[in-house]
Image (cartoon, rainbow, N blue to C red; front, side, top):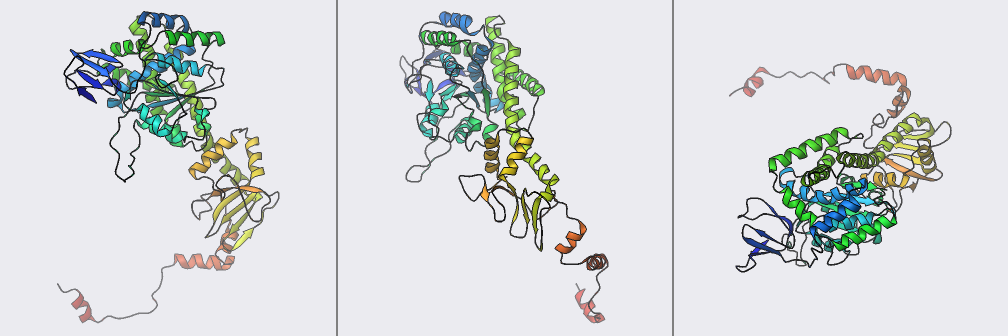
Length: 498
């Protein structure tokens, strides 16, 4: 919100990044202050350090330590893409892209987080810097993010406070662009909060998608970039850390001002073109791929525009596209792994159903050889139980190693159930060892792939073959009336009177 003061400062604002005012022909990118059409705009919100050094020194640092290396080019493009994502959000509604930069402590991910922050302001991990940690409540993290449109929201070390936050829920709200509505202590709804847009960068040692309760919806909103060696060496990392703290807060504003001079039609066409190219080049597609292509396109656009503004090809755009496609393919593979493994397991059960005890409403079929589990197809229970030991053998035979990730997703999606909240397996009467319990949606053996031959169908109906054949014939015949009844003509005439 802009506040008119009628003095040396025309307006005060509690927002950062892209802002629009009735007197302005185009949105303006505002950090500490800006002069727009004779109006002096000044930020008055959470205290932050915005600039140190000068533009030329910061650009020289980028040319020396960042731009010669493709991994650092990628990081720079991610940081600048927040400007583009936020700018086109009112037109494209692509949402906020949450980027999870994960890897071992020596890969330089925290250094890259500071590099992205330094484009806009102080890169310190502090109350006056643009990098924050997870050592806070979810409410406070979202509150700090409010009103930021075009500045990346950066959270370092998600593993530092693993039990404090539901990462899946946090990612969903970040991607949504606004906090969920909450009530005051008296039950009234809290006043509306400022939204945010752009990009969120979260660093962690292990990918967030491997965390507990990481939902499929969060998968669709989070790009995981795992195990990239961002810096060339420990010395290179230190040089970047030193450089971003000596000169910061200029390049982001410079890029935004150059970018805002481009027509919105040209920007939207460029986004559509690059999004289509990314989607066409994605090797492993699923139902989320188009959405992710839309979200990733601004990163490639940032690289292209940065080259155009400097009038020199300092960023290898093709390598940026390859980075994104590889990261997306890996994420898609993990998104699809649980679903594909489940389909594979069902086929495995179908092929080996003679190893399962099968319980029908009026009969039981005993497994003919080694027991893999039990299938119950009764009125009250419709489950397939497979022994944990046999499930482990199934995974090993198929070269699948991500067991816990798969089981967590299956449990979240209701593909398996357990009578013990903290476990994925349970004990089943008549079976030795713990089992996975797979619900069968309806009493339809064919749906589950269980073939029932005709003698068994007859027994299920409580009929022998001769009675079954007789019943089938009778069903096909036209039913006969129990007795004849003649209706008098005068009664019929009375019924059809107007």
